[in-house]
Image (tube, rainbow, N blue to C red; front, top):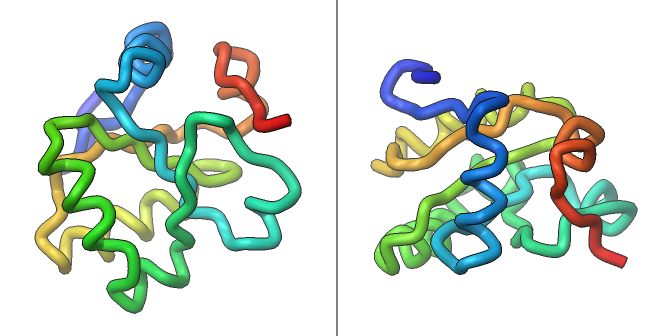
Length: 116
């Protein structure tokens, strides 16, 4: 799916997303806040909170990931904060990423592994 200039991952994309992450071709970026991150997270994710992104903190991390030609997938708890992240990242010239608009529970159902 497309969402403006940003790709939105859909049902049919999950197998490819998981394969890309397992084979080091993609990076999952969790934009939830620290309290949420500490409670539950996916083992393949890195943490760049939305509150940091809104201040420009962490943008350089995403640019470094992109420079390695990895795909970047953004996620939050329910899918709504990724929409805000899309706008913020666009202000910093970051537009080549995908949004996972599904909840964490749906991601678990699709095969994403939680950090133990």
